[in-house]
Length: 352
Image 1 (cartoon, rainbow, N blue to C red):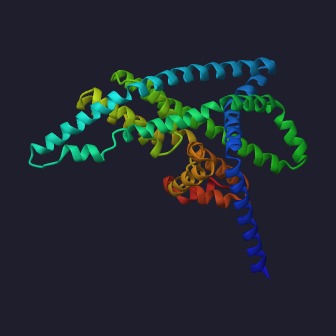
Image 2: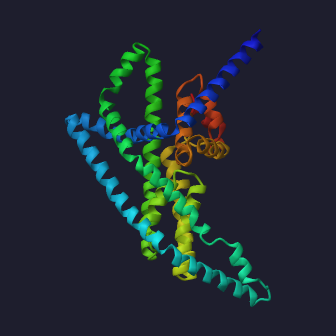
Image 3: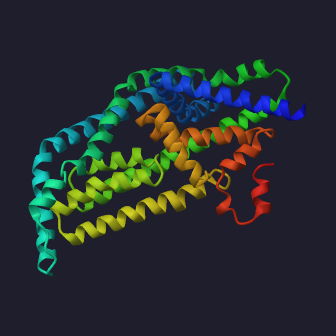
């Protein structure tokens, strides 16, 4: 009897998961706008709370945040759009330079007795495909940017509700202090993750832009912006973000400069992603590498290209939600990366 009851629960949870996933996939466009609004509001809400403590009128704080975010977005959008248009205009010329570089490499091997047919290589090698990853990624970014107005409106409404949200929670949970504490723990953890991840991604983009400016690589701001966005995709994102700048350096600069650009890309991404970010996040915030990999596949399938950008953020949010409730904390442990925790005793303390 007990076994049949347990099996019934398992089937219920599995059915609920399938229905929810199907619903998310069917309404992916709306869900993406909603998620981006919630994430943006979570990042900006501490400013509203801090303004309330300083006794600044809510409407003034609200207008200041809205004006600042809108101005910053418009400035970045205009710079990136102009750089992208110029890049796509010059793309045929870059393709010719890549062909010349390929022939030069073939001649180098030919001088050592390794005979290669240049025509066959160039025929098989689709030069434009080398830049398709970048143009496709930026094209997907453009789709996201086209929904920005709705995201800003959604964020505005959520921000305006921030100061009174605690009162609503108190009414919903009434005298259930444990439920309020669990929700507050979840909320503060999610805010911490969003703020730190956005800050480290922004730092990555700035460092990449400054580094490329130093080496005089064209479209430094565009590649820095791409680095900022793709930093939300672990491992794969950093590699994809580095490809266009490295190829441009290879066809417009010397080998020595390209080597140093590759070196500094590795330094910047490793220093920020593997040193600074884990220290700011703290123990217990890491996801298992296997979970990260499958989350990219799952959320990419459910929400499309935007799902890959949000995959780790969404999975981390789910993990934090499980961690916040004692009854589901074991699921949070399964999702965690405990390989970096020095001892089991310490790791257990994370989930008490």
